[in-house]
Length: 264
Length: 264
Image (cartoon, rainbow over all chains, first blue to last red; front, side):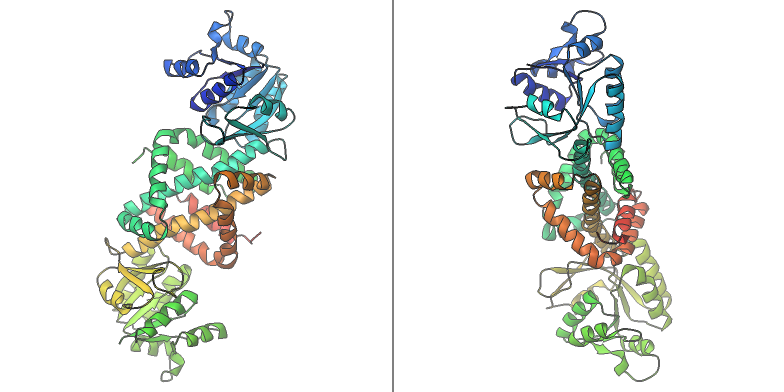
């Protein structure tokens, strides 16, 4: 029975929180400044609002009651979330499970360690967990086993990522570099064909020689329209990771530009 | 019965020439400055060396005897080939079937038209033609039907690309933007995972959720090692096409950088 702070549960965070509640843990979230959509998502997942805690600074109360804090947020917010938690005196296990580069994860680790917490690196691959077998939470660094064990028997397949301290972030970034990089590329390719007046000809050629691509491009357009705004920062994290490894940044700088555009 | 000049038959050019010879046409090539590998490839495809023509300037003789000239070469050489043919007074149908941007194709068209020739735009999708059904030669612009008809009954599926004058080049470029862009991207992704020490973890995750990717990355590595040098200029043509359409150039600038690297 562990108390886990989830802070601001979005779609992914709420689904993970529901799994933890199902495993018998208490999951706290912070309603400060959040709308009714977040509140009803959190309530339906069985999470406990920090508003129900003693009055005063709710984030301080949440941080003091939590053994583990799990950061699941858009990648551009990861450092701010970590800073907020560290500033409120968190000394438990902080797990960042966001799509951030190993270098950003190292900065997050530095922030929370300065505040006295233990850092465990994480990376989520797959959709918000509902049924088992589709969503993996990779974990690395000292203490990773404790976080993994919280998910025993849940729909989250929590696993240790072998290797260096930030292996979980590195694995997530490399995985997303393909999935989201190709989503952006296929949108650019169709836009190019459209601009040149050969979109129908390209679809006809694809139907013959690359039969999965038309549907793949339609799926990419749908995902980009609904979630592309959140992927811009992720593409920048991937580009920074490529650069740190001496590889070209252009694929994911271009992908960020594609996801920044209005759909159409 | 048409006389077709093929100039410098590489693997693709020789296979296309063999198809044309099989359809009863005479196919001339220019042995000037070419090695024994090209000569034996041309001979086995049934092509006629311009050396067998009356003495003097062999390219002039080839150009004078050819009704149609088909340019099949690495994209960085396309303008030089066109210039050489134009300078030697060609006034038949010149078809550029190379992986060049619509803008480069327009420059090729300008060069050969200044010399008095008719320009037909082309683009090849698929492997060197052996059996029917795998290789398409797209053609566009006035005169495209004449070039298409040369291939009747052969393993080359020659088709008109509907749309603007340079639709065939645009279609080829858009098609290759995906196939070769993703080949470069998957090599970069594996190199990133390797640099971060998570390559085996990535392969294990791919085996679960993206089971085609390990093999795809191996194929990409093999192709890049043997043909990557030729794709660098093609990636630049694609990047230029993206730029002309107001789209980001980074995917294919990065791809050029990947294909320029020594394999490993």
